[in-house]
Amino acid sequence: MGRSAGGGGRSPVRSLNVRSGNLSKTERRAIVEIINRGLTEGRVGRTNYFISRNGDTYTARVQRRDRGLGFIGEQLRTSTYTSTFTVSR
Image 1 (cartoon, one colour):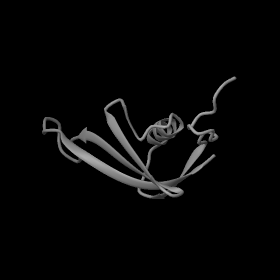
Image 2 (cartoon, rainbow, N blue to C red; image 1 turned 45 degrees about the horizontal axis):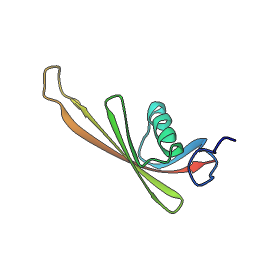
Image 3 (tube, rainbow, N blue to C red; image 1 turned 60 degrees about the vertical axis):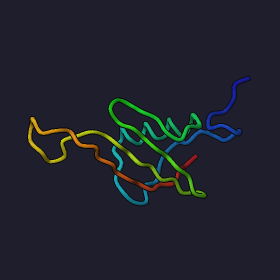
């Protein structure tokens, strides 16, 4: 028979309830998939995700290279955004 996602017999994560910070729909989908696979970090496209858990609260660090508010031709910089959230199973 199939094994449930999330490791340890947990039911899979269905959605995120963001407590602080901002997460786009694409970022939410990537984070849900990373958690369901039982991983703590992952890379989707040009974005790195680092997820830690403290009790029922998760913290996601989203890291990507961008130009910020700069102009075309400026050097890329590494931007890091942090969000805290809980999950619904």
